[in-house]
Image 1 (spheres, each protein chain N blue to C red):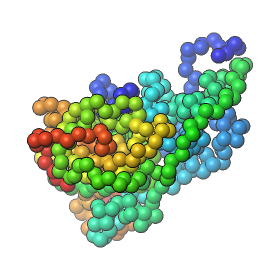
Image 2 (image 1 turned 45 degrees about the vertical axis):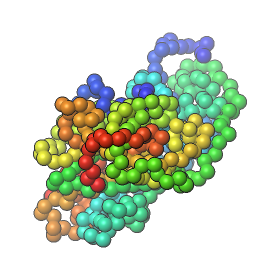
Image 3 (image 1 turned 60 degrees about the horizontal axis):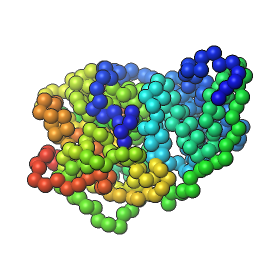
Image 4 (image 1 turned 180 degrees about the horizontal axis):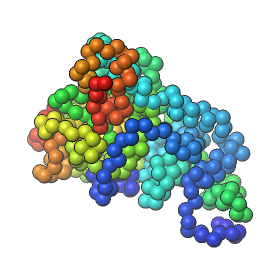
Amino acid sequence: MSHGMTPEPNARIPASLRTEALEQLLTERGLVDPTVMDKFIANYSTNVGPLNGAKVVARAWTDPEYKRLLLADATSAVKELGFGGPQGEHIVVVENSAATHNVVVCTLCSCYPWPVLGLPPSWYRDPAYRARMVREPRAVLAEMGLELADDVQITVRDSSTEVRWLVLPERPAGTEQLSEEELVALVTRDAMVGVAKVVAP
Amino acid sequence: MGGIADLGGTEGWGPVQPPPRHAPVFPEVWEGRAFALSLLSMGRVSGQNLDAFRYALGRLDRAAYLDDGYYGRWLNAIELMLLESGILAPGAIDARARNLRGERVEEPPVPEPTKPDYAATAPGSLRTVDAAPAFAVGDPVRARATAGEGAARLPGYVRGHTGVVDVVQPAALLPDTHALFQAENPQHVYSVRFDSHELWGSGAEPFHLTVELYESYLEPAVGIPAVGITA
């Protein structure tokens, strides 16, 4: 490959440098536009994130009609609040309660409902999470800080196709007086994946 | 799938990471660049073929899959797609990277493109299928032990195991052939519910699991009351 100075031919070149190299190669051939890249990065850094999902959850907690729609046709319900796009072709919402607990994983890659949760966090992409959640969810959830009582029925959702799962967390007791806007601030990404519960302030 | 990406149920990974309260989307700048580059250059091969991208991910060796992190894995998979479609020459990225850090390396010439002659019939992956679904909610089904090679999206840990159809999901194009730029072959998709003891034996934690499976990955299972329906 190289006849120049290659002191360590087997050393892996850092991904950061390889990324820069690929961007240069494709940009100079006009195959990629760096300003379009900038827009993608900005969009997923600031606009498309778990705040979207939190708005969906808070609306469902305060509007029974919306909740019915969300559980029946989540893709449409989410779209009603203005959210959609890549990795959101068919969203299904499942409700957590005191008796049943859903938790989402993608064992084959890291499929995740981008329009409502943004890009997946590092723990979701971690091989340990992907490998173990389908085998010992109660133990994994405990390691993540969520101890579930023995009589809680756990259902793990392995996202192996384009179906994208979103958990509607249980509304915590003591939040009856809070406004929809105040509820939005309580809802976490972790609760919408099912590795945590929403807690009252 | 086989391969490094088929992680479900595999052992030896140690503890999971407790979620931090706040973490940036792209902790390092290059991760955002690799993310955007992957999405954009995917379209240069033959449309936004996510199945082809996932198939490329699954064909990486262990080091290329694990050692550079999530977006490093994306970068390596995109490199593979760009090599296979003749958009980049083997070694082109490494040669440029070495030059960027001050070495003087000859870069390979741009190859003849061999992009697949293939176009999706519509955006996205959802399609309509004329035939009625072969299975209905409540039907016992077995994940075929023999399916799941190549670009198929059949996790190894469910192969040969029996569950019950929980939800009939919208039909979608089949990764097995779409990922190879051959055909869309849309199929019905089912969320199949498995009992943990069926998957992992009598000593397993009690829980249910659902996973989406394409119709051709399933065969009817008779008389095995695998798990109750709660949906």
